[in-house]
Image 1 (cartoon, rainbow, N blue to C red):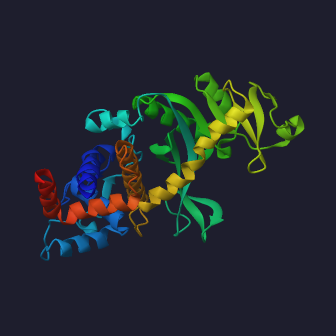
Image 2 (cartoon, rainbow, N blue to C red):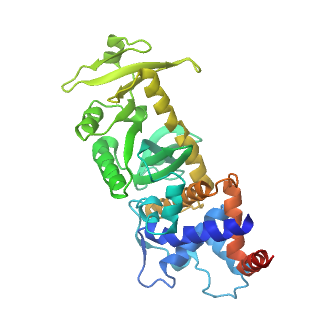
Image 3 (cartoon, helix red, strand yellow):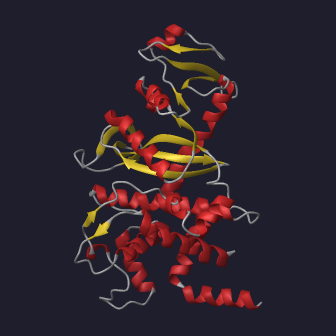
Length: 360
């Protein structure tokens, strides 16, 4: 399994990352873009920072002082054009090669899929006035965070983050959602329905989605109007506004909690709740992103977004790799990280092991 991991996961990852991350390095940089991507991947695997990873790699590879075999963070202190968007992590390019065929066999691309939208806060421990930093509810000793709009595929227990967009203000929510949906369509992903949590509650969003022909379910926050309507479990009613939309209530007896939804899906309240529950694992995927996130103390937002984009792409590649491993069990994040590290540090040993297996 080690050979399969090392020679399956890592080469696919490094093949597609340059296409997925649309950033450029300075013209006078000593190293090409691919070298920096490789360094960031190693930093994510080691749960370290780029500079420390570079130093460790130089020592492990026996590099002499001044060697340029492994790039150093200070060799390229400025990234000219950071990835203001992550271009379709994995799925928009995987159709072009073997990864696409394997993903389709894994059931990721061959039918319409639910898409879950969410806001994600990446906590920030620094100055209040830093670029793209928002004030948020205090959590883990921080009241500031970078914010992202994410869209994720939900299918058979898998969650692929296919849109990652930095947010300066939620005032332009509809524009961000339209942009995300356009990118999803350009990837060739067919949408079954859209799921939103209560952070997207608004009168404008249900009307906006329905006019564009999307089926949706939005967890709707209670307000004076919904309290006046007074829906009970299994009941529904039109929400009174200029362009009324359907709201309904479904109670989850397992947790003793009631939910309001704005939806245009032709289904019962209980079925709407079951469909919505599919998005509850999104927070888990955010925790998994952090497993692959390189560390940095940089105050440059572009650098921080690049690091997070790398983590999302590695997470997606891990999900796709697991989709290919039918009958071989789930590959854990730790196993995937160790396999990449082994291939990076001792490729000759792994190649020798593979030759031995082939002749065994």
